[in-house]
Length: 261
Image (tube, rainbow, N blue to C red; front, side, top):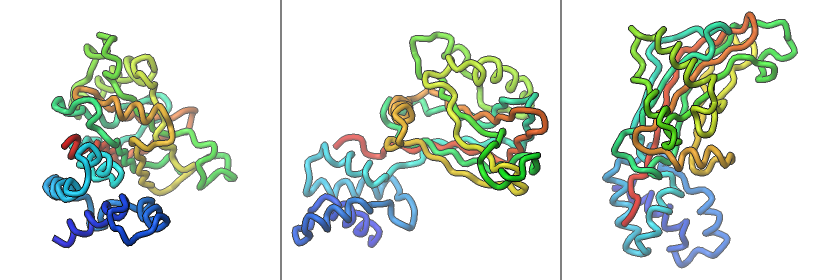
């Protein structure tokens, strides 16, 4: 199990468990702790790493160490059902919705990952902005429903998972109840990514909201997620001629595998 020894060694070095390292070496190693290059470990592997660390450290430190190393598990994934085209008259339009599994308590979610493959109409009258993100009027936003449990309407208007046969009706409901009504989201509808201005090719953007995000509201949003909450992604376009071509949208959540020992 070289993989486990490698991961445990990184974590041990980061915490200064190797007595021959001086203080500067320990600090440098701690700043470079990352998941093993072969990919995220399995839950069983993380448990084994936690048990190895428990031999040297108090149990209440282990979850903090695993969080620092970002040893988290992908718990749920939602995908858009098909490519889409969203113009000003259709926007905003629901593309993907992920419901947090009911068994997850508040505080279990560590990261939300958005993977968006999209482009705009490929032309504009502003050549100086082509190929940049300046002056781009097609974008994506996300909001989380159910964060404010005191509002009974939030629970009553939770939408079912996207179904192609009911796509148009769902878009109308989504537009009316969600994206144009920021009060439905405790933290509002927040921009995820903007398309490249006059981009002719689809571009994939990967955006992560996690416990270490620079925005206080994003960190709070992740911390407060729990079972039953719904993460919704909408495609936007504004002004005549602007069009958001959506190849695919994926939403994932990652959770702590060890929360206490």
